[in-house]
Length: 163
Image (tube, rainbow, N blue to C red):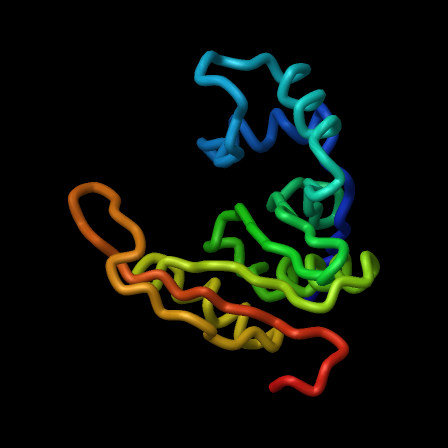
């Protein structure tokens, strides 16, 4: 069995092609509603405030996911984590672990994320395997395709006694 060699790298222009074409969506809150070129998207990502980091996750050099660290609060050392990946790849746990390593490298103490309960059972398992705990259950927290869904807000505390 070949061990997965995941690497986390800053999102570059070539990685944006993966985000747009393979993932079928770009969930970033773009500054305008018109279509953007890949160059414009790359510039937008790199010129955002210091409270955001975008990374591409590669498995043996092939892109498999995008990790976004948003709303970094440098004073309180908190961050919001978003992971966009193909959950069928079986790499959710390893991708989450790679994201946590980057958060540790940035010397942040709390990582928060939210997950739609009905749609992401493997993502929830991967988060729990990496130490995340459910902090908030938001009933009817997400509305899509005519249906309300429950959203779990989960958090991981690094370097503290909180369990």
